[in-house]
Image (tube, rainbow, N blue to C red; front, side, top):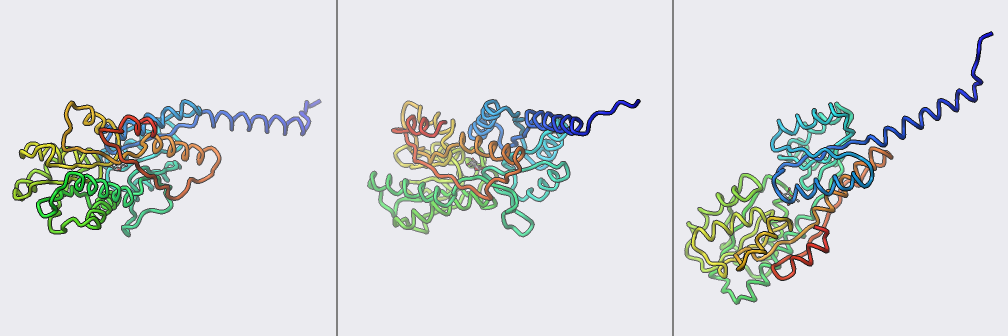
Length: 329
Ligand code: FCA
């Protein structure tokens, strides 16, 4: 007599088996977190925050560098060979978007962007990839308004004051931020002809320093300078260039964006420098939220919101510790 397992038991066994597989798969969720500038405090904090969330929720985060297109594609290959289900990325160049999306699709991985949003071949954001980043224009306006208020407090003459706008117009979020700052300054009466562009090739301190130096030396007639850029690392490059050029701290008002270790170090110097402040945004929240969105997408198939914009708070020498604590930095 052939032994037979009753159909109901078989069905039960099958469904239990499926459940077990499902649970195991959930336990093993692994995601990548790829960033364009792995040495910058902003990005280190994002990756650390994502990793901490993974430890709380029981998924693994693999932190990787993607400083150029080649490195990004090998990072994705590497994630695939480790069995990752998807990745969060801040790309080194937003025009790499289509290539990155293709590679992710080829491997069946889900992808979300943080900070810098992919552009499609038409130059428009790739709307199908969920994004979380700063509300660049608004935060830029906060920078411009804070600079204008400090200029007024110092009683500077507008005709003797120039602006060093360290620009990165290839990157839409960077342009939005410097445009916002420019508009707020103009609204406050800043002289348009006194605004000078220093286009940087990258989003770091050394490229900003290199861009700023010749602009300062070509325009030696100004008594005071204000400095702004897409981030505080770049503003610091401008401030260092102003020091090398011979301007003193009270002749310069530099205000950045981010609120990361680079700014904290500056605020802890014994005497103030030309770096007056920064609009701080929570990199902790950016890292946690994007990792959480991706994890939820992988485990429940619920796609994250198409675009989330975050806000900032002005941080200066006077309040930086408080703002840092408030933003969980
Ligand atoms: C860009 C900048 C970073 C940070 C981030 C939110 O990627 O390069 O410094 O400001 O946006």
